[in-house]
Amino acid sequence: MAHLTSLLCLAKQFNSKGGFQMIKIERIYDYPIGSDSFRILVDRFWPRGLSKDKVKVDLWQKDIAPSNSLRVWFGHDEKKWDGFRRRYFNELDKNTESVKTILDKARQGSITLLYGAKEERFNNAVALKEYLEAS
Image (cartoon, rainbow, N blue to C red; front, side, top):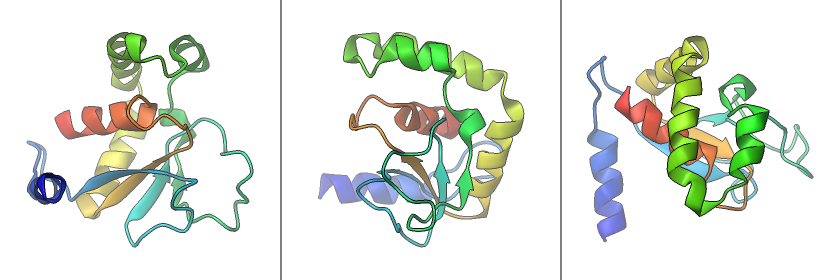
């Protein structure tokens, strides 16, 4: 019930620049054909073993992914999460065009940020969602 309540609150959330619908996160391997939201793959590399014609991806925004050096340094290590978020947010601050593209889509309707990592709590899609909601 608490999960449903938090999802409903998120769906009603607005930011100071005009509001947005819901921003969801899904592991692409778990939901390859997805839902009716606009689906954005936010990884630098296409997910292994998934054919582009069998997966619903509306936009592959690889430029929004963390730099290769940051990705390798982080390695989904929970102990490095705060440092990863800080460094990734700095990269996003310099990547205004890609951020704007996603924010524009979020203002038009619900979006789903897709990622391929096995780690569900500590990955770039989780950090990106936090960044977008604070924008």
